Image (cartoon, rainbow, N blue to C red; front, side, top):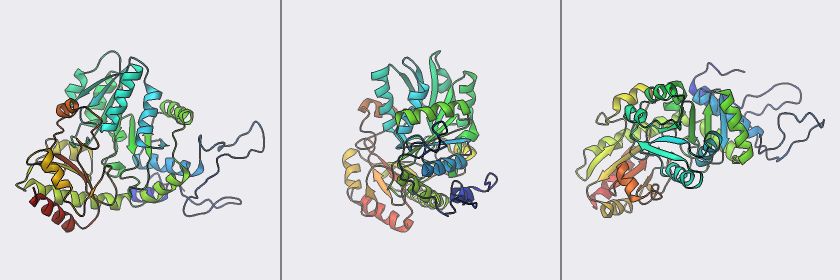
Length: 389
């Protein structure tokens, strides 16, 4: 059965789990969890497709097929975490002395990984406001190899023009990596906009239930895929079969969840934008967002992430956060439950205060991952906590 021409919802349910009807085949509706670490062979010189589960596992194979299908790429690779996927990219594509251009507003863990490579391997990194493509082009050097983007970015939800930056990068023979975690493949497909490599923290929206750690890489280039596949096996940073099973299951409701995340987030962002104790709201679905037009041109939705600044500073932000009852004070995002956190003290605490200041991450900034609860309950919870500051 081929699902190439089917809609996103159909592919999210079926790709990788098609029953096979011939003697000796499996015909399960749900892909089994293959726990075997190794696979028997009949002939010494004929190992077969599956040899050792670090190299390839049937459950992971099913999931990687679905990854590629949903991002509309030729290939997909699964990893033990989003950072494992990013580290594998860096091992495969970079060498000492190479230069990377990154969005100035990147996930703190990605910046931490860059710092590690700067200190250990002599990598050079320049962070720019990629919402202005000309700044990306102005940062290119002879030793530049990669342009690393997020759109929307973390935690300020900036939008960059992926197509425009990809055209610039390709004129200089540079690769473009886009972290598509915040929007998921349901709302945005960066490879269709010109990106060479798409990376995800599967932990977030794709798995969607706060019970899996995972990462993924999707791409079209066969030579790049072969290199990354080699490094995936060599480094061994692969997900367990049980984690792959959970992600396969979670993906079946991705479109339903993303629509509810978005409708709740849009209502909450509009509410916060008119609240006297909120000084600024960051949400791509608000017409006040500076890159609103770019966002609606390259994506089909706005996602479930909202950031905002309370009037005051760290003291007021902490008091607000610790007064919430429905929102859960926790790092991470993309689960069915609403999570909320303080970037400067939590997700971005690993980068320096100077870096946070340069990126615009203030002590009054709060980032929320809006879940799929009733939006009236969520707004009521925000209201009672805001009243207390």
